[in-house]
Length: 88
Image (cartoon, rainbow, N blue to C red; front, top):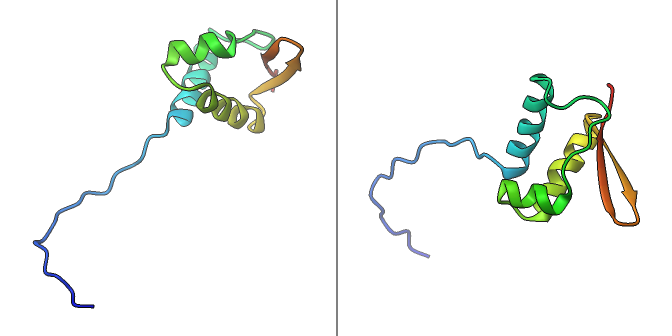
């Protein structure tokens, strides 16, 4: 297969910002600022995803990442997910 000649393209490296990482960072910032404390509940999944303008799946990814980091606990209830900040 012959190679085609292309002009020199200057691509710059980027640091991809993922929505779930930005959501997690916002939660961490709220904790650092003392606006969220252990035992506080986050808004409902539907409300929070609307506020952040992201899909509920993206929000769930962020919440799972925060749970794995030990920052929040996700408790499943009959009516949905209730997210509680941990004390650690």
